[in-house]
Image 1 (cartoon, rainbow, N blue to C red):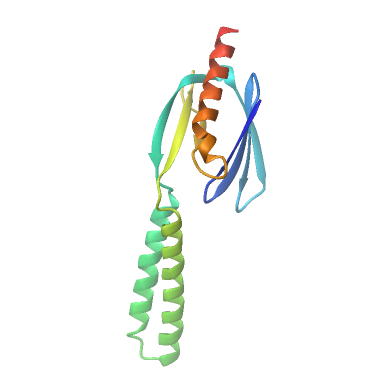
Image 2 (cartoon, rainbow, N blue to C red):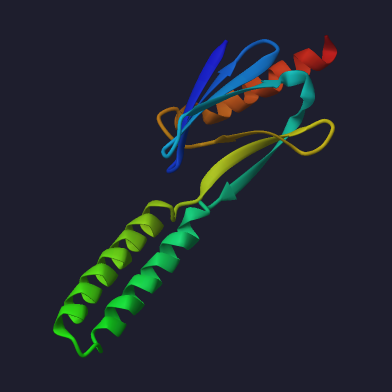
Amino acid sequence: MKTYVERLVQVGRVFELYPDRVVVTARWWWGRPYQTTVPLTSLSPDCAFQLIRYRLFKHGILALAIGVALAMLSGRADDLLVQQAGSIVGWAIALAGLALSAATYPRVMFARFSRRAGGGGLDLAQSGPDREHFEEFVKAVQRQIRKQARA
């Protein structure tokens, strides 16, 4: 019926909406693809919209702080080779932390559908190439959930 493609920093997902289910195919940047099927009868048509910042943001800030500390502390070493190596490694870690925190700083809008029985169900992010079709896809999912509940 409809397809929605989202891209987050750590994962890309494709949502395929069928009359009775949503098939989610995810590709994590460190692993192989994963596919799951969510029956629409198991979901509540009400969804919660939440602005969420990536968890990796905190890891980026931590790497930035550790890198700067390592670079500063290595400047106090007595050995010139240790000073240079520690400084280069420290600033490299700090730069990587800065890049990670900058890439993950913006908050992302998520639509979360809970299961009728409780617990997590289905979440969609307004991110990636189809971001302008986010609300349209969420409404299509809600319509299909309501149709399945009446059937």
